[in-house]
Structure formats: C-alpha cells, structure tokens
Amino acid sequence: MLRISVCLFLTVALVGCGSSDTSKPLPKTAPVSGVVTMNKKPLASATVTFHPDAGTKGTDCTGRTDEAGKYTLTQQHGAAGAPPGKYKVTVSLIMRGDGTPLPEDGAGEGGVAVETLSGKYSDLGKTTLKADVPESGGEINFDLKGKKKK
Image 1 (cartoon, rainbow, N blue to C red):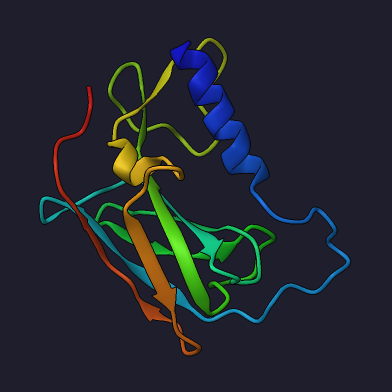
Image 2: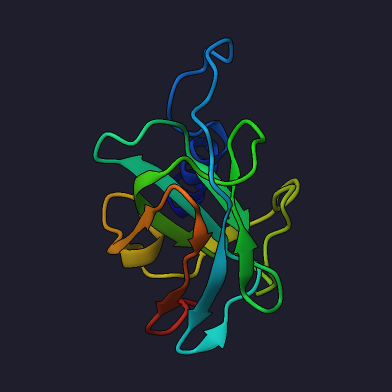
C-alpha cells in the first residue's frame, strides 16, 4: 500500500494540475525563492511546490532545496518564478529505503521511497503552509517543526 501511495504521489507531482493545453500563454511570473528549515536547520533535498489557490492563475511551481535549504521556483512548463497570487504550499522530502534523499530521477527499478515529512507539510489536502506571491516576487521562507519520519 505504501508503494502504491508513493507512486501515486510521484505521478501527481510529475503530471501536476492545470491545463495540458500548452498553446495558451502562461501568466506572467515573478521571481520567488526562499529557504526551508526544519527546527531552524536547513532542509536539503526537499521539493517545494506552490499550488495555485483562491483564483490564482497558472500551474504548479516547484523548486528543490540545496544543502543550505535554498530553493528557487520554476513553473511546471519551465518559466522562472510563479504568477502573483495565493498558494497552498507543500514541502516533500522523499527518502530511499537506505535513508538517502531520492534523486530527481526517482528511486530506480525496485527502489523503495518513503515520504519523511508530516502530512501537514507534504500532503496537499492537509498542508498548513500558504504563500502570497506579490507582483514583484520575493523571498518566501518556511520553518517546519517536528521530526522526520523514518
């Protein structure tokens, strides 16, 4: 059941939400970056996703944190930043069975991957994280609380 859940999550994350019609121009974006910490310590290798909310136009925008916890958003179709507006935010940290971060190309054949963050951060239906992207963009930081699941 866990493998099915992880596969479903990865499929949704890769496919994303929004129209598959790429002939329509995407909304203008603003540069967005920030730092994700957990208990005030940088959270490396996490995927940060801004999901449009409350009438915000556009598609999901994602970024992956580096060793310092810094991320920079990119729209699903490649444009830098995110359209101005309101977002629900998820932060996901999927680890392989050996406890190492999942590479961007997946766990590999027969690999096992597990979400290590609480659903209040990693599950779109439960997330407590929100962001408001202004016209000028900016830095949006998140300090998560708690412990990673093992």
